[in-house]
Length: 162
Image (tube, rainbow, N blue to C red; front, side, top):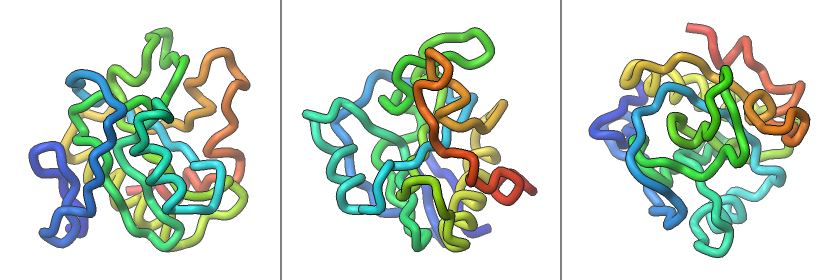
């Protein structure tokens, strides 16, 4: 077992992944959904800085670099501000029941190391919580078409296979 969740924090090979505490969050949640995003640029440091800056007003639970390094910004039981106006199966405010994963990039190409990290992280999260579904930001954004991530090139078959 490569990744595991312990007390709402992600561990890899027994060590907690790097944690940067984002100030942009709400109250406690019980996660039932995972939302996959892309950052919209290729800068890991830019993504981490933006998601941890109060001025941005946005956050995510995890950021996964192109080389597969995972950073955690919020415990999984804390409401992140990643989904914006959103709805899943008729239920609004997806932030209130979801884990947000930001993948560095613009959605054109998904390196093998990043895909493997996403798949392994999703497996750990699914073992720790009763996750009902894994979706893209584009699938829950309201109105439809407001967001395009993670985009048509995202390797869903690879990251969701068991």
